[in-house]
Length: 149
Image (cartoon, rainbow, N blue to C red; front, side):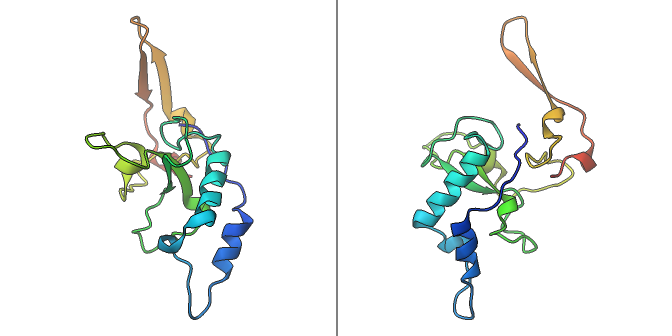
């Protein structure tokens, strides 16, 4: 997992949210079209075009907007750019195992989840080569207070 340094939200996204009035409130469910494309591409760019969790290469159209803290949590603003990431696996194929944002879904336990928004996130993982040449990953001992971004 690589640390993701959040940038400023795209001005188009900020302007869209600022159009809120008594008759209309911006909502993640009505985010679409060119604006959603701009948002996804901005997230992809700030992440170096890799998934926020597994670091696989992101391809536009095959990735989705991930809410690190789930939007099902009423204390979370679903349009807070600081909470938005880009995750792989937008379109699951039949029988394909879920992973990354799809597997995380609405699960969130700040005592167990390592945040890619935490500058120290990379230190929780170690990668070692086995004698067979395969790569073994080892989760380092966790200090829950150091996991969140």
